[in-house]
Image (cartoon, rainbow, N blue to C red; front, side, top):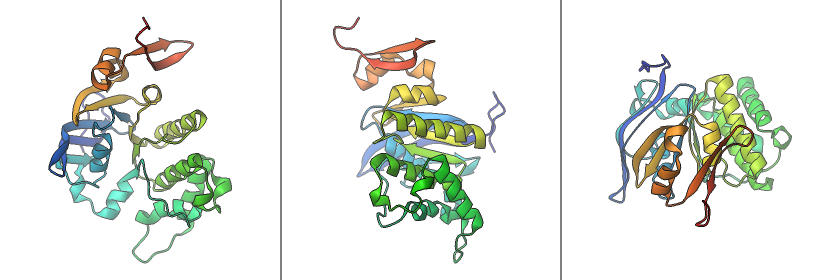
Length: 269
């Protein structure tokens, strides 16, 4: 297992030279990242930068060149079941079996922990109940998925990933379709899990203010390439955002107002 010399913290995710081509077109090129156990890395960048492609490649869902190691072991040496016990993915556009109840859907997260012919046991039902309670969805366990609001459905998808109990959580735009209160609740919950359970988080996010308030480090993709990587103070800077997003912004860092990225019009000073 690789250990970071600086902090003595084991490296959860180590990506080196990762590249993805789709239809003979380079989507992600030569990306390198590492995330310590218990850390939160946020992948940011403009539309079409390759963020979702990178996350799916890390999850083993897309053919790629380069290497992906999780706690020192190459991704390709893990079988499908072991991979699912190691990494849980919350996609931006999940496939939803609408005839399922919420409990049945979240129970799918326990599949990697079951034998080939085994059915769920008390431990699996307990994991599902815990995930539902953490997402404030205990009341909806018997409800059909197609009866939920968009925000409730997003929380059900996250509950399934939490029930999976994988130590690495990949979140692709986890706050899509949520109002501001739900966005904060979901991200606060993820942060609580990270702190309490040692969960390692890799997310993509468009909202730079929310990203800046929760993630520890940032990887900025532009044109499929990693153009900046580091803490908020080194990546989420007005000139960096202007260069790669094509937008003028200001950064507020105030003890009473908190931290935020705000757009500037041409008349703003």
